[in-house]
Image 1 (cartoon, rainbow, N blue to C red):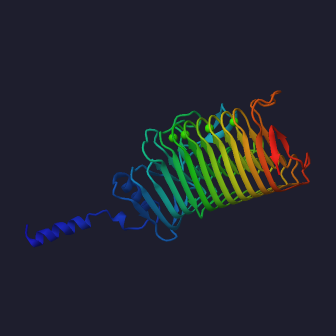
Image 2 (cartoon, rainbow, N blue to C red):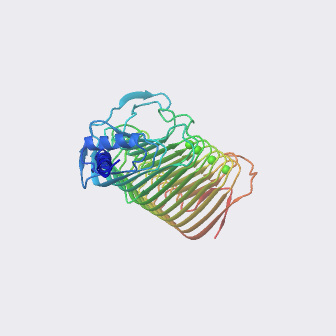
Image 3 (cartoon, rainbow, N blue to C red):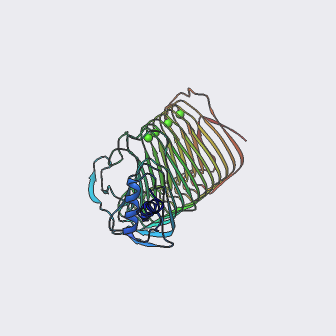
Length: 415
Ligand SMILES: [Ca+2]
Ligand SMILES: [Ca+2]
Ligand SMILES: [Ca+2]
Ligand SMILES: [Ca+2]
């Protein structure tokens, strides 16, 4: 080949390179083109939006690639008001009429690492951002990283990570991998306002694998269902860490069965490990923190500077069932003006409670300020296990309607 021909071939190759790699996404057509290209070309690892683009969708955007994908939103806004469908149905298990959907505004049907930066997804007719993990997925956990992402005003879930092969998220079949969610500087506000039981953030993990959630500098407020629900089944546990997180006014949609600010349901073998630092919970409609651990495994909870005000049920409720212990360390915690117990710890089955409460205030709650009970079998006549141990330092209780003394069973207190 002479020089001229070589140049021509190179030039032709350059011209035929897909332009979406360079052109920034500015509307629905260019977004769809970029995602379609990434779905068929594993070398595409990033999609970049034009600064502050406003994008109206007419149908869901669905990524199905196997490669890690970074979406740089550049402060773009995706409006999902006209994207996707949902249908009304009667849920036999829950005995209620709600809606179901396969749709969302921005969907990822993959177990690959997905990162979204500087992006808003608003007014979704169904769900906002959805990750559906293929049931055959193996290897590393599916990882979703959100930085400066706002999911606002979705009728159904704001963010839904789904590792449950059952359409209604019943049952126990999921992929062999877990879910790792990292969120920073983000907002999940006013989602779940179109039907019963749709949360700001919902993770459904089944089969082998853990849920790991790290949430920093984030506002999860005014969602119709729970602010955030982590629902883990099968082998594996839940590790959840929050720093500087606000959870206000969640759980109002279903008046006959109100929802929580932060709900964890862990079933089967595996622990709950929660660390919350600087977390504020105000005006939530069921529990503030509602942590349920079942099957083998402990509930390990560390709270530092956590304030729950005006909660319609318990401000902080930790239930541990079956084999396993409650290990709770509460520092600088304040629960006030709740309509039930302020802090309630209940340990059932084999195991015991070990707790340290230091600088804890429970005031003006409608039931007990603190209620700490350990049982092998609830209401047993004979105490068969060794007693739990609760260390109290710098405790203040006042104005609690049932009692300002701690209600307890089978634990001893050390002052
Ligand atoms: Ca799994
Ligand atoms: Ca699991
Ligand atoms: Ca467990
Ligand atoms: Ca137990």
